Each structure stands twice: as structure tokens, then as C-alpha cells.
Image 1 (spheres, one colour):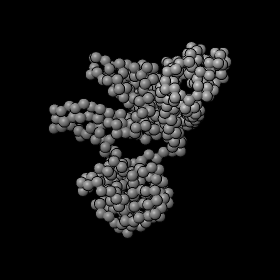
Image 2: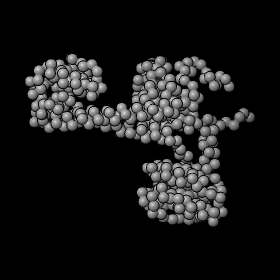
Image 3: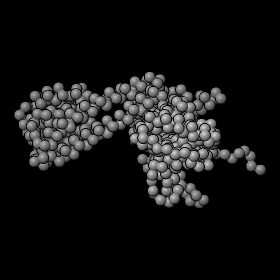
Length: 448
């Protein structure tokens, strides 16, 4: 006779999730499903058999739906229910306003994934027909089946960190666009300066020199040669602090000046390109200042949450990459396990097994793309400076194990970083290399 329940870890986690949802979507509560729009809201009240009890259309903004909730509560009471479970798709910012109103009124609140609504729409009658009235019913049906989730309820500081993280992401994208545009413009009209430094877009001396040239040459770089090297060097030295540099690299400055006489490139495009480059560098410098200010604010929030020392205790990770990750993940303590955080990032392996079939496993890519990107970027320096991750990467790519490609191994390292970050924050204990490497048990487990 079999011993034990035979439940897997996944079964237990799923049961806990369903129990938490059932506490909100109680059987004594009717379901108020709302298809949110900008100015028009379509709502239905359903019982737990999927029957529509009432329907209405409201012309109002999401933050003005207090009367809709009162209407839904009256309809629920009229049909013998003790309350409401309010549900919607996470559309823009509107669902947050509705969640606030629902919680103030004492109702339960859940969200339904937009992808789940889309697939349910297809399965409902095998068509792709879409109306707001139909979508509101589909949202209600998913909630009745508990195919929904409890959304994040971020506190003020965590919400601020998320907004700063979103701003930083936009600034990083704009900064990267400036780099690419500068390289493309020079590659067309005047490619010689690109060879003056190994990584020109990352060299403060190169950027300061190009700023001087683009500002003063008037579309003709050869004019700068009349300044003489010493005057050119003095102008670059004055410009250098504006690009975050302290010491000038004479070799780069000298090669830039030599490139002034290089005729290579489309000369007809050169005046316009250099004028555009001058404006682009001004934008770039402003973006760098705003990016630095945003990162300082993020670090201040992280410090205010008391997580700076814990997050930066992981070797190879400074406070800023940790803040970027936490801005995307929110409070890690809201996840039941480290694995849940990894799944939220979409870095968990997606297996393909059936009978004798053993397909290739890949990461699921079903989580939050921004969190996945933040963890991926943080893993690159960590692999070099964290001895545990370095050994993990070497093992995964070595000949002794099933060799993984470079990208696959780095994904595994990024997932390990997320697990470590979850552990240090939820336990309140600094990162321990021996525990991370599996050579010692965690202090909490050992005490238990």
C-alpha cells in the first residue's frame, strides 16, 4: 500500500494558491466582472454557475466607479449573496483605481490575465469575435473557475521604486539609441573618428573630443586642425568633466586630431551629420545627467527600505543592479518561494516530456520581461566576480556535464541571482558563499 499523499511540491503550491483565491472569491459572494475602458465600463454580475444576474454600462473613468460597486452590491444582495468579488483585466493603470475602490468598500478583488481572456474567447465559440459585453462575461467565468490571481498591493516606497525603475529603463533605452545613432552617422559621413578608441562610445575623452569638434567645426572637421594640438587639447580638457571624465587620454585625443584630415566617408553628408551629431551629443549629455539622478533616487529608496546592505552582500552585485531587479519584481516577500520569483521572471525551465519523449527544455519566457532583462544584465559581471556563480557557469559549460550554450548557462546564473536575492531579503540574513554553493545548511534550517 502506498505511503503518504503522493503530492508533489507543485501540487501543494497549487493548493495553497487555490485556497488563497477561494478566500477572496467566496461562494457567498457574487462576481462583478468589469471590462475596463477609458471612458466606458461594461460590467456584469454573475453567480457561481456562470448565470448573468445583472448587466450595466457606465460612462465614467475608472476612479469614478464607486457607484458601480454600490450597484453591484445591491444586485448581489438581491440575489442572496453576502458580498462581491470584483474582477477585471490588468489594463494600464485603471485596474489599480478599481482595486482601491473595491478594497475601500470591503469587496474582494482579483485580476484575470488578458491572454487567458483571449484564449477563452477562442474556445467559447471557436471564433475571434470580440465585444466588451462578451469580454466581461468571459472575465467572470474565469474568476468562477479560479483562473485568476491576487494582484500586487505595493506599499508607497515599493511603488515609488517601481516608477523610478520604469523611468530608468526608458532613459537607458534613449541613451543606447544615442550611441547607436552616433555610430551610424559617423560610419556614413566620417568613419575615421570611430577608430580613435577601442570603445569610442564608452570613452569620456572620445566623447569630449567629438563634442568639441561637432560644436566648432561648422560641418568641416579640417578647420579644427588650424587650432593646433595644444589648443585642441585644452578645449577637450575643459569639456571632459561634462562627460564624467577626470584624466584625458592623450592617445585618443591625438588620434582624433589626426582623423580631422581623413577624407573617407560621404562628404556631401558630413556638414549635416556633424550638425546633427552636435545636437545628439547635447541630448546624450542631458540623458546621462537624468539617468544619474534617477539612479541616486533608486538607491535612496533602497536604503530607506533597509535593503542596501542585504542586497549588496551578494558578491559581484552592487546596490544599483539589485535596485533595478527589485523595481521590476516588487517586494520579494510576496512570493511564496524563490522558485516563484524565478517563474515571475520567465527564467524557469519549460520541460517537454511525455512517455518516452524527452524534448529540449528552454526557459519559459512567460514572466515579466523587464525583470528577466534586469537579472540577465546583473548576471554578466556577477559571473566574473562571484566565485560561486563562476564555478556554476564553468560546470554548466564544461565537458563533464551536459554542456550548455553560453546563453543557457547565463540564464541559469541569472535565475540563481534571483533565488539568492529572495533568500537574503526574506530571511534578513546576508549572503553566505558556503550556503549558496550547497556546502552548508542555511542558519534558519540548521536552527530548526
